[in-house]
Image (cartoon, rainbow, N blue to C red; front, side, top):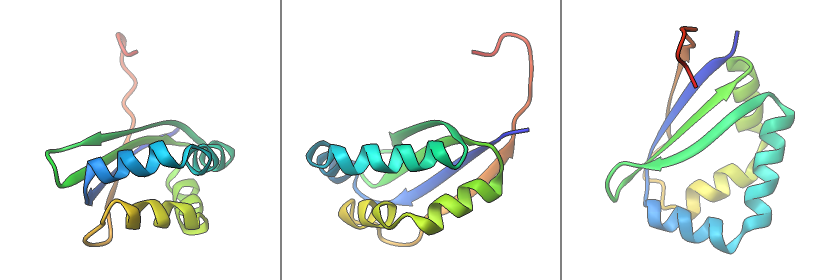
Length: 101
């Protein structure tokens, strides 16, 4: 069963948006690499002006770790966003219920 991964990063959401807008090929490359390793959903969100949150669904925890450790562009993106420390990463078991979408 897949897992939900939540990554929290102390960084500047606007800087991430600027990097992403200016480097669509890099962003697409990261996305394709994630898909190839088992990521089925991905989104960024911001919490104020100093935190970026990533919510993904992965085949399993190992797939995320393999992806994260093998992608220099992910680390380049975090640096461009002004990451102040390594991200906090947590995994959650999906709960299947009626009414999900």
